[in-house]
Length: 288
Image (cartoon, rainbow, N blue to C red; front, top):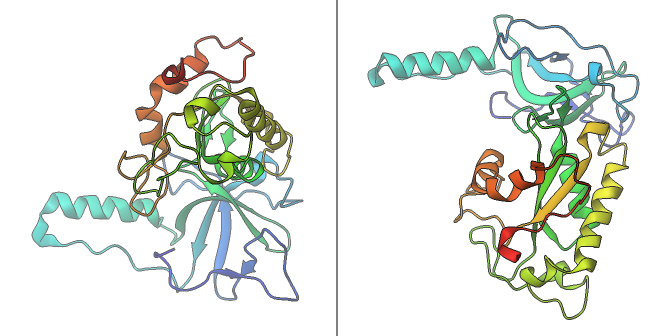
């Protein structure tokens, strides 16, 4: 990250664990602190993990760094006024606490050997109705890996009793900059012969089953989905892919999670209309 210069952790051929970020470099400090959203300085160190790939919730926390490689701070420009200086100082206080720990914003864990694993970003975490911290990215990536027809898969469930998902399919003309059209492309054409458009696929049982199978497999994968409340219960297919032009993606093609949720509220809110409904696929109004 840009707030520290160079590496903080590394692996060597002699000490290496696939999926971890290695161990801290001599002279650097890395600790996992439980998150207190009200006070960055109120820190409690999380216990070391017994197994980095079967983590307990108590073993997870925010990855924090300390050492001479950490920046001195954000530079404010007094000529821009007191409000600007106050904003920069507030940003600095949230980034580096009063003991010199840089708060990365990453959720992670550390084992007895000092090996570090990153689990997700706190800004991306979904907080379930029961207070569960759900890291959606590993699950989203796994579903896309299992179903090549999917372009984007975004989980939703903040303060909800279960998780739902928005799905986009690969489409011709979709570049990230623009969403493309209704015609399917790439892996999305390989599910069933004769189905060539998103609108057809959204009503086709084979396409729905292919997506559902990928979701079920991911729900049952303890590495990608370590918590029961993280399992995706319902999904819907959107009529177009995400893009910069439609404001769902940043210029570097990262998903704007909160923007997607707001833009597509009409698609995901009906999935919570009847919490007891067992139907996993909810047809988008555009395909009615």
